[in-house]
Image (cartoon, rainbow, N blue to C red; front, top):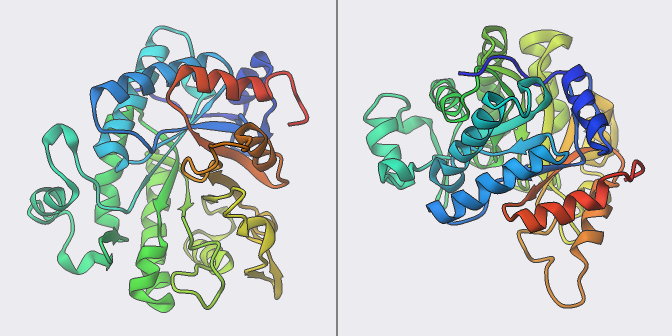
Length: 344
C-alpha cells in the first residue's frame, strides 16, 4: 500500500511544471479536467485503453482521477490503481501530486469474481453480514445504501484496488436514491450516522475528505422527488464535527442540456435562493462536475464538444470537471485545450 495523500505543495508544484492552469483549494490544487473512468465495457481491451490513457494523462499535466467501486464491475478502480502503483514505483510521479476520488453507495458487481450486482449483493454483502435487507433503499432497479458498515467494507476494497493507504476524496454516490426511499427526515438521520463514520475514517487516515456525487439530487427543484438541500447537508456535517468537518466536495452534471447548476436557484442558504454552485461557495464547499458531453450526446454533426468543455470548465465556481477519457488521442486533444492557456 502506498502511503501519503495529495497535498497543496505537491499538487501545485506538479501543475506549475506542466504548464496546466489549475484551481486552488485549501487541501490541494487540481487540473481543470480530471480523468473520468465511468464508461466502457468490462473487458481487458477497454482496461488496456484506460491504463494507457491514465498514464498518458498523468505524465502530461493532469493530476486528478475520478472513479467508483461500481464502475465497470470494479475494473475501473483496479485499472487506476495499476497505473498509479506503476508510475509511483518507477518514480515518474509522487503520491502527493495526484488527487484520486472514488465513490460508493450503489451496489456494485465484481467482474473478476464473475458476480453481477444482484449476485454480489446476495453472496458477498447479505450472506457476508456486511449489510441487512433493511439497509437497502430501492428505486426501480437502483439499490442504494447509507449503512456505515457497507462503507467500511467499500473503503477497504477501494483502498486495496487503488493501492493507497489514504483516499483523497470519498463520495456518497447518487444519494438521491436513498432520499427518494427514506424521505428527508430519515435521510438526514441516516446521513448523520454516516458522516460520523466518515469523520472517524478521516481520523484513522483512510480518507481525507468526503462529499456527494449526485446526478439529480442537488439540481432538482425543492418539491421534486430526491431533492437534497446542501445547507441541511452541511448542517448535518457540522452537528457531527463542528466547523472542522470534512464534507468538502460535491459533484453534479453540468453540460449544455443539464444546465440547472447555473440556471436554477434551487438551493436556499441563509434564507436566500441560490444555484447549487453559488450555494456551495457560500458554504465553503468545492464543486466538481461530471458529464460535460452529456454521456456522449454532445458529439455529432454541427456540435463542438471542445467548445462545450471550455464553457463548462470556465464556469465560475467549478473546481474541476470529470471527463470520461480512455483513448490517448482524445486525452491529448483535451489537454491541449488548456495547456499554456492560464485563463481557461
